[in-house]
Length: 591
Ligand code: OOB
Image (cartoon, rainbow, N blue to C red; front, side, top):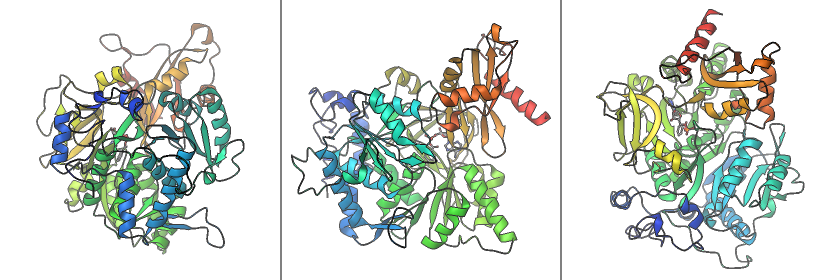
């Protein structure tokens, strides 16, 4: 075990060092990462350690310990990619540990070092874990892209992080990632390695060729990653022109895992099904795959989120817990109901807990979970920046179906404030601000944005509007940030507006949410055309196609385009998005 008095006591972020600014050596392996990192102030870090929240673990050491404690237990089940009659791959803890070591040695042999960034864009496959734990062991930082991301997002992540590597599937959902990788590599000087999972790697390197026996690997293994190091970069849902990157440390993230495991009732008998994209913070850590591995349980990877794929997998693998966004929960509820009405069984008997989060789950749907799926609903209101709230498994049913839970940690500081940052009493809706042992103190390399997104004393401005009940549970009432939550997939209005503005016929654009019975919200782009294009306006589909062709994730393409002569204005002359939202909502109900 690591000495608990010394966790994170590297030359870089240790309790004796005055924060990250202590790194004066530009050749220190973490220097580039730390240059953009807002550390936890020393007095907070010391307290989080003293309270036993940060225990000096790293992801590498965590897997090592689990593998030593129960080598033969199954860690990862991937129903694809195996050989012979049964395509299912099952890796024990010992095998995952060994694979992570071999991957780490191979990555090092190819020159990937502690502090390097590697953009990871993989579907739900076993290789995701082999790679990510390999990177953790090297101390290189995965940058967690989503499978839906395309040229615009990927090229930005690679350039902004100075990534040395980009890891992709050959083809996924009909999209050839190798072509995208070739283009991004040609344009990004830092990008030296494109590694491909499954299929023909083309001009790139198959990931399967990377692992080597650590004993054969030339050169020193390099300095071990430290618990206080940034372990990876997550993506923010964002409300600005470009997505922000979220630096999470081993210490802080593992604390959130431990808390989640406890609150979700996980232990070594838990079987977690990864339905959502594995790299997203929710299926990764709430309690997700990493929480499950922390608990010594079993992670089952679901290649498709549909009931047709997931239900048989749940039955076959004895899945006990999973997490869904609200639209998928609705789909599963409807499907299970239909199966039952037809006299069949959905085969969900093993399922004990269903987590639903990422977007507001309606009370009406929440009430159906227990009777229809036969399991306990656990609402989760979390964010990649940190704070995660859960309803407790033993909360009264009314609390479970009407609130989005309460924070993991007694040291999560939650404030509900008015527009002037004055605290509001319980029961009143206001802005949610938070600070705590697993909430970042700043986005990576974004000083200007940080000044707006964090208070001077380090509270993160979540952009969410919430109300706190007498029991300390939070109810999400809305959003102040300029973002559309499309069933859990976040769309930053400004990002899409910028793409629309690039169209020659567009004079101005305002993207707002419109209500949708399935996704909760969809995107509506209001567009003012340039004078000379008004007589022959472009069609909506043309503008949608234009945005798509700029290489954006599909979920960001506006669902609807409305042409107007001018935007409604607020008192001080800004575009009134409130009026635009009301207008589109009214026209939807009247049509
Ligand atoms: C999760 O993380 P992100 O980073 O994709 O999005 C965070 C935002 C929150 O600020 C909030 O606006 C919204 O997503 N949100 C919810 C919600 N859960 C997240 N809004 C209403 N009700 C909920 N239950 O989405 C995320 C991260 C970890 C666990 C779960 C979700």
